[in-house]
Length: 585
Image (cartoon, rainbow, N blue to C red; front, side, top):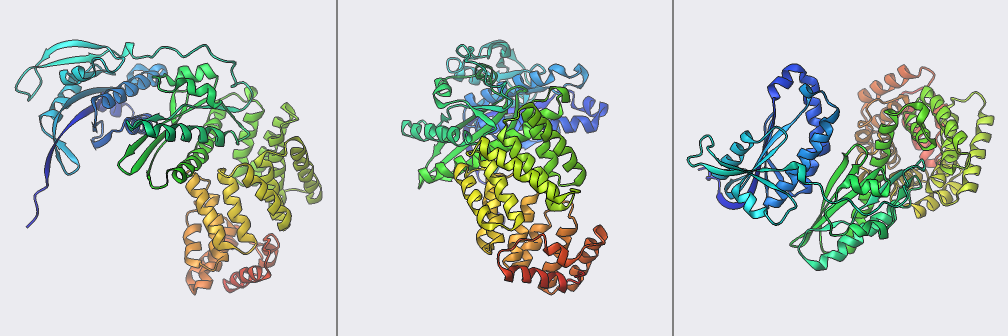
């Protein structure tokens, strides 16, 4: 006999939200409306719910029901959503604006499995229907709970008769024109004009109610500031400056304006029994847009080890998201207004596409960056890297001249700044491609020392270990890089596949290579080789044909000439696998 689901009662705040004119908007522009709604969910609504400790109970095409442990969390979430949506709609035609009505009630709720039921839920849903478009309506219970706790004004709407609710209920409207906090102190000189991305890390809020956890929240904030400061293209506001906001209600855009920064990181720490929950958000202050948000749940057993782990993960992801957002901003900017850093970012994006045409454009962009700032060490390093890509793939007409240029650019970068981790990372990469493993080791270790949380440096450590015959260690480093940056480039899968192949773990190698969206002839050659070593001639033949279809001149010996294994047995293993797959010698 099936067991009846357990019913529980709990005091909680329920937020009901519904999109205004959903059917009309979908009829007007179905694809555009759904895409914009999804974007608002990803960038604004879901991060705000997570930030304020809410849980989405259910969603419909145009609405959602959310539970909160407190009325304060529910109202602060609703206020943030409505204020930010109003800003997003500022430059949208009125008939295409996406707006929400929100209703909030505080009461005794029936909880059944993951669902919530009862009058308390129904009241929230009815409150939503009488809210203004872009507004918030709350019950008297919510207003009485928060009257003196939040800097929010409530306007009395009187008693309202609500559908399917037997008694009239007194309702209140949240006055959204009175929720801005006071502006921060007079701004220091702006740092946002130096051609770099700039960022301020606000003190993480201690949400535990436990004063002893204050040290952890402050320590986490300081560690993130210190670690981000290692990235040479990030200008990071000092701890002494940002901690003046500790414990204060703030407006992110006002803080960004005060410090003259592009981005703001904010977060919170909450202790729950023997676990700690950390939430973090990265906000593009210029567009008032959430770039990234994440939540970390960890055991409290070793609080300092956990602090190190979470710091590393946050820093790697934040730095990557900042660069991605900056690239996006560059794409929306007129070319004539780009600074040296913006040209550098454009060159990086082109370089990562790994095609000959994009490499040509990348060289043009990086040359413009250096023209604007001849002493830009990072740009010189990347120019060496981009020319190096053309040298590795044979896209340059004069290989000797290209190599001379690579050496000159990297030498200049090193002279200008011996402490730029990316300079050493690129020097390690170039020397790996020359087969000079000892020189590569020096620069790789130097890069790791300077910036151990950079996912590109971490993944290259895995690549280096693979080349020198330690692929199992290489796998661990590559997986660490993937954990550090969940938005890692696709090529990380290539490094992982190669490491598994060298470790003779062919099924794992094939699985890694299958994550590559558009395999080239080299990926198909690896897949053919791995399949052949597994004893799967059908798959090997398929990939052999695809490799040769992409490059009819593909030959084993010429290809192996570009592979720089330190151990002879690794090179011979690769040769045997390619020949067994039927690829021409």
